[in-house]
Image (cartoon, rainbow, N blue to C red):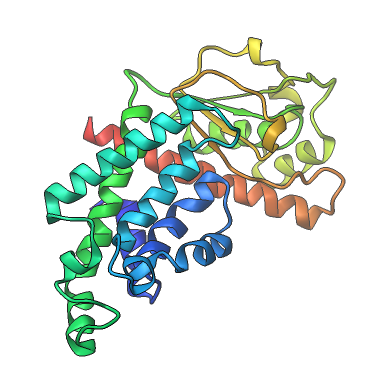
Length: 286
């Protein structure tokens, strides 16, 4: 069982519904906060609010796929077709394992009108396996085909100005994950210097002098990239061709207190380490 499947199963065993366990486990990697994810997915759990419809493990997976690949502007056929194709492939694999994606068929009982004791017994006995398998199928569809590379993956941390968050991510990527991936950063508006608070705090926390080892770069200054991580600049985030793209949804700490700045730095460290682990796990299976 992979790391994400373990996290999903833990969330389910802690009392969240199947759909909630799926979406809340993946959401922060894709720019959505966990509280919002839990609220959005609540009504889609238990066979769509006990309506004997689609299994919540499946609807949770569908929402993750949509969050990662879905369109945000009308007519984006490429995003729409990719989303539809991945959901159809998930349905195929899940059905091959369990015979259906329908909650009532999977459990053999109607959660709304059926025997309550039997329903509780079936949920406890069957649903953990469903959420685990859903997470493992989802993980294989979302990441492995895109993140597998012939050599060490090249990761670019990008934002508009390439002066603060993306520079911090590049520095921490090199510091913590040099053996797992190559780190770069870039932006569309080259700056004369890196944010001085970022330079000062990274020096203080990690003894890394970004003022000497890094500089602001344009997208054309970095090599072809396998993985693009945007920092959270939303519609303004630059576009760069890649195999895999995700948004970390980070607040810009520029002009804020050291305490707020360090919170962002530590969040970047956490996400860098998570990406390192993910790529290390994938490398072991290839």
